[in-house]
Image 1 (tube, helix red, strand yellow):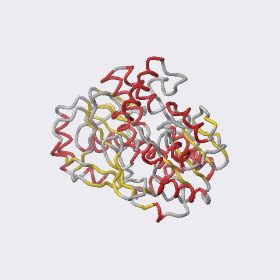
Image 2: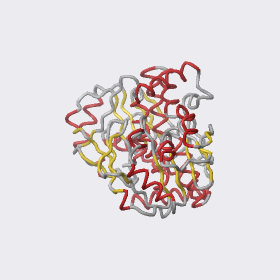
Image 3: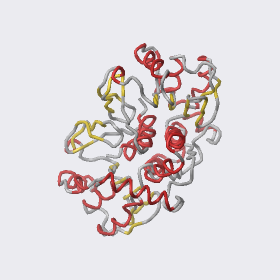
Image 4: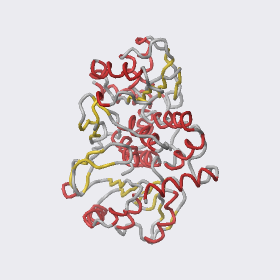
Length: 200
Length: 200
């Protein structure tokens, strides 16, 4: 798992009044991340039947999860009654494998954007894409913006602003290189190479 | 622990060529966060003697750690040989309790900024403050910006830009409310109340 895919939105959602954030997995326990540590999913999928919001994080390589019928079946079931079904980064490919992107506008990490069409989705190069109750975010850090949008919709502007201030989210990246539209060509190529190597 | 304090910078630092990110604690094992899950610190403090970079995350209430001589003693020892000693959010109060902020310019979460003076530091209301090899970040999400600055300094502009693009860090918060300078007064008051309640 790409840790920030999940932890960015979790930090935002945990600050929403009345929210209860739970980490679920096909098999509960510590889950390896790409940040040198494990995150513990304490709850089994089957133990959480009617979540209001589902958020699926990504990983450099989500192919094993895209073939896991326990996860895909649970997502399809949960989606019946969610208020919002969401993903960050390549989590969108998992939603796609579950059949939930068919006919939907959706986004994912810029490097994977063209893969969405294979699931019947319309790929959209935006940071957060809302189509009905399906909300997809771009790569990794986009989950923070996605979750603030969710809090805004669920709990209102003041609640979202309060969370934003509590996590002092007043971003000041040292470069304007965070999007394939703004990054220098050599950086675009280097990032593509690094990510492809990591997923090999 | 405030999960994003640690995971934001870890995600950035893990993308730096040649970096090895390790999670250390006085007692290894799962550590409770404010996001509904635990993060596993696999390494005991004593097993990591000469880290190049130390990053101390914060929590809503860091007072127990500020009194833990195992942590404070280890920080003082590690600081002798680090290239960079850093903190995010209220992690700065832990550095302060270890005596490492004496005479230094430093920052922390906006709600705690005036507490830094008690450690002999000069509080600075900026997102990332560098004083010698001491680098402190503001609240929670500021760790992402801090870590990108570290990668830039350690590995160069192209490496930092490559990480920024890999995590698609092209922030688009829905509001301009992430700083006490920009948030509406009612939001400032609500966030202060929520955080004080959480630390009580």
